[in-house]
Amino acid sequence: MLEKIAGIVVNVISGYYDIKTDKGIIRSRARGIFRNLKQKPLVGDRVVVQPDDKGINYLVAVADRTCELQRPALANAEYVLLVMSATQPDFSVDLLDRYLVFFAWKKVKVVIFLSKTDLISSDELLKIKSKLNEYQKIGYQYFVDYQDLEQYLQNNIDSDEIWVLAGQSGVGKSTLLNRLKKDISQKTAEISFALNRGKHTTRQISLFEYGKGYIADTPGFSSIDLSNIKLDELKDLFYEIKHFSKECKFRQCQHINEPKCAVKVALNNHDILDSRYNSYIKIREEIALGRIPEYRK
Figure (cartoon, rainbow, N blue to C red):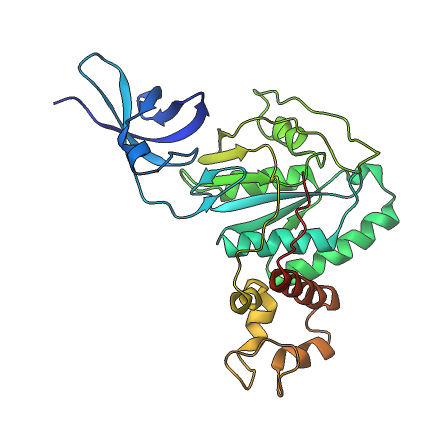
């Protein structure tokens, strides 16, 4: 009986799958059954590889996924390291909220890193940190210092855990990855001032070993598509709104004009940020009208 070997997909290139196993990296093809099932193995998948009688390795099984991201396609990410730039492109709480809603919907936890802090004044940095402090109260940890982030990642990435690097192109994802893993070299690019966004520098998804687990470098999210979120579930993707909604009179309160709405009380008491509530209303209206902006990367 030919040996079956378990591993994780760390790279996909032209139909070949690089599988990290206890025996090293094994390059494999996928069996035709996956095409018949309309199932495509992804980077991050836990899989089983088996050679045939000619010694050619084939991917023969894919374990159930804990989550799946699209555009870029990645399986089983447990955390997102979300890179937001202080400038070039400018820091935006509106965009930050869209990312946080998207990843909450995908059930992926988020840690925020603020890049390009050396390009703004100390006063400007204090203003951004003041905003991020409010997000930390909600439960989103953030870092502005690289050494602090590196130490946190080394101590907190669990065995075989997958973290994905995300953010607009041009915010410094590849630069950050270069520092985190110094034996690789991702091409970096200058920001396009005309468009206030960057050019793609990463063309494919790869997992790089880091600490006990992996960090995924991606080409950036080509869109933040929230259109498939149900209106009734949106409120629970804002964690502080979900927290206060437990005290609302009506179980299905949408926190707009309903009587005895605990969320509106919390808003009036400044326990919920105006900007966060406004993001909730704005996203809700856009979902209802089916015109979510893509924020192309």
